[in-house]
Every structure is written in structure tokens, then in C-alpha cells.
Image (tube, each protein chain N blue to C red):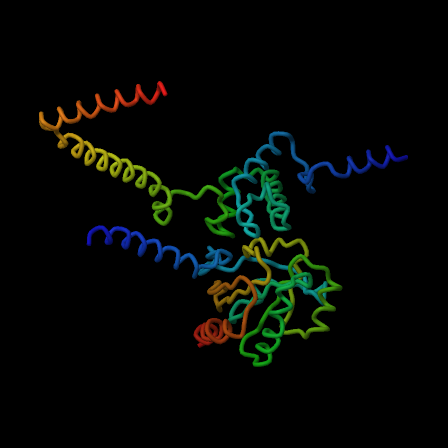
Length: 157
Length: 174
């Protein structure tokens, strides 16, 4: 009896995707693909594929029905944009008002690389200008010898 | 001096962007339907299932469409404001009863008052989708030519009515 109940539960819990109209496998793939491209406006950082908000379910049903009616993916997206605006697209289109969004990362990258090279060349200049005189070199040698002798004494003790 | 100028400039730019970010409401999404003709629909009336209401019937007048539902919590806050506004009789308010059932919806109106000239019964939420409804309550102002001129997502307040809706309605009617 218990086993039977478990089986019933499993059958009933088969996937949220089974909403109303049935499609063939290719159609289902398209529904999934489109659902991953569209934003759920109620829970703004989820696609309508990830969300179980009422609106997301309704929109998935909409997609399914439109695929059944023979609409193309582009037509279905246009349908959504006409009602909910560009925001419904999870990947923002390249347009005059989104161009900054698209090019800003590259601008920042180029700027960053430029800044890095500028800083590096400044450093290089600092290093090359630091030349020692013969006297200073002699002093350095003496000091190094001294410390080497000290080191060996320290190590023995 | 130059040393301070660069961090200061960065700070100012960041402050401007963050300040702007604070004043924006991410829930407020610009509707593509503004200045577009209102979607065509024909649905039955909430309290009279046999009577249909359609876009065509409503043409020739300025009207307000208020999307509401008995399950919607924010609608409860909004409702007294609409009831009060409807008493002035400046503009007909039509309700779009969104994804609701007739009985609880009609009880709701009976208990809390009915500001609507009529409520349109959108059980499946189809017309709601056509209007781009995503956060009930929503309110639209539609002009005599049937063009959507204003949309408010979320509850309408006394302030919204006084500063936005009423001036616009007056302008459109005049």
C-alpha cells in the first residue's frame, strides 16, 4: 500500500513542464530554449524557465501555444517584447540605448591594459636611472663580504 | 594636489551612479505599450457573465483600467484610494479582474466597495498578458482614441492620483 502511494506521488510530481498543451520532442526543446531566453518579470533575476511564478507558468503556456500555432522563435520573442519591453529578454539586444552596456567591459579592459603599461613604463624608468658610482660599488662589495663572513660564523654556532 | 584629484574624481563619478541607482525602482519597468493602442479584447463582465465588454465599446472616452484580484494583497491597500477617487465621477474606472474566480471577486467588491463602472473578468489572464501585466495591481490611463497614455505598476496612491492621473485625465478630456 505504501509502495503504491509512493508510485502515485512520483507520477503526480512529473515535472512542472507538463502544462496543458502537449508538443512533440522538438517543440518541447524550443519551449525550453525560449523559456531560458526570457526573463520572469516578477522575480527579475530568473528566466521563465527557472521560475514557478504564476506569470512564468502563463508565459510558458503562451510559448507552447504559439509554437503549436506555427510561430517562429523570433516572432514569439517579438510578441513578448511588444508586451513587456526589452527587459523581458534575458540577453539585452544591441541597440542605441544598450550600446554602453555592451562596449563598457571592452573599454574598461583596454583602459586597464593602457594603465598597466603606463605604470610599468614609469617603473622601468625608475630602475634604469638608479646607477651606482664605482665608490658605492666598492662599499657594497665590502658590506656583502662582511655579512657573508658573519653568516658563516652564525651558522657554525 | 593632483594626487587627490584622481580619487576625488572617481568618488564623484561613483557617487553619481550609485545615487542614481538608489532613486530608481527596479520594479518599475518602462512599458512598451505607452502611446500604443490598447490591446483589443472582448471578455464577459464579472457580475454579468452573459454581458461582454470590449475595447470598441470603450472608445470615444477617456477611461482608466485597473488590474486587480481578490488574491492580491497590495490591491487591498489600493482599494480605498480608488473608491474615494470614483466618488468624484471624473473618469470611468474599469476593473480587469485578473486570474480570479467570480465568487471571491464579487465578495471582495461587496465588502470593500465597488469603484468600478464595470469589472472585466479575465480568468485565464490572457488579456493581462496582452497588457503586459506582471505585478498586480496595475493601472492604465487610456485616451479617447483608445491609446494607452500612462501606466502605473503597483498600488495607486492618493499622491499618484493628484499629481499624475488627474492632471493627465483632465488634459485628455479637455
